[in-house]
Length: 252
Length: 252
DNA sequence: CTATTCTGCGTGCACCATACGCAGAAGATA
DNA sequence: TATCTTCTGCGTATGGTGCACGCAGAATAG
Image (cartoon, rainbow over all chains, first blue to last red; front, top):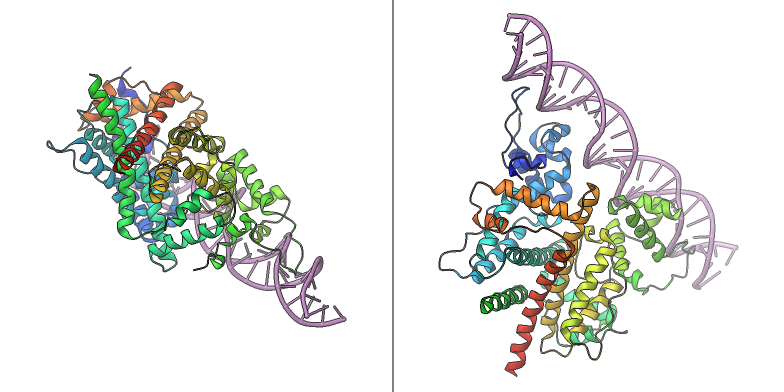
């Protein structure tokens, strides 16, 4: 099975620059980068819902349908936008760096990337990463675990786990921040309000565990608290990975 | 601060049945349940994109705009649909059941719920759970961790972590299954094809960790392999939680 | 019996993704 | 140089979308 003739989706080939310019026909007046950049500009300014084909085309001064010469559907454009927005992965694991701090850095970089472009989280994921940056992030994540006793598929599962958590976390916090901004409140207030609402809903009825939680005093959301909750989840995952690595190492 | 007068979003109040029928005016001809059920029926049959206000209204034999007497925006309807589709949480932790099997059951129930209604994963989450079922699931998750040495916020973080992973995992597998069905392939083939595509893209260039992974033989996706990867992630998380519980217990 | 309030819903608006096909540009071939 | 082939941008058209607005009439309160 030779890899040379594996078929690739059109927009992926374009994004990787694997497409030779066809001999005939007029020159293209746009580049893929320009189209994607225009989409990002719109999303950055007015949010993902504002990204319509006509709006993006307007941004570039071309007709709406011209975009379909670069992208086979809107979803393609969105995917490429997300890939571009992730940007460069964090620096690879240094020679003296352990897998754990390296993976923690990688996880944080995931969160930062989403927070820098909050609209990313609304781009529906439609499969494993194939864009140039997505693959580079994958490489960086796997590199953090090189040399450990983990098998290949386990390494992959581990970084999928971490990135899933990071995405989930970034989504949650970005949602709260946006809700707060929309209603001219502080994020702390939004958190507080949620606890009050939950308290009202669960005051009566079979919710002992929730009431126990609320009674403990729900200090809802100053910045350190946020940070602490992120660390909590991440540390749980990394502890789990460490447990496995140790047991693997002990078995050899 | 009395909880009694905390303001709640309109559709939430309606869903919890906290709204007394106003004296005046004509009787409503529909119930919230009917509207939500109609939306679910459409999503179930033709996918979430097919859920338009007019389509749902048609399903009920009423005019499009009538729905807005029950729901303040389409996003409200989607949220309520998701809440309803989650259905009953799994059975609470039994008296002889440890926290770990209980939480594992809860995690699996999350996955099952999404797989049973795959469109759920395309409903954008816009905040912490407030629907009746969402809160009940929360209660069940917290209950699994009652009696452990964990603090309240830690318990919450832990179940958020688990449910985030479950959602992420269910999304990934559902995406693959749908892609396979759409192209008349088996899920194994779709996985295999991805590895081939990745191999082609990373054949040249700075991707040593990925090539190492691919060289190890990427047995892509029979059912046990799937199951094993799910267990991998879940066990990592639970190991992490266990580590913390042990250290807390030792400290006392 | 009247005033009030809430109902379902018809109309209208702005906007959306994208199928189709055409005129003309550019290189390939003769 | 002339013709052919292919690819370009894009105008037009289709069949949707969510939802603001306001009206006629139903039901209850006083």
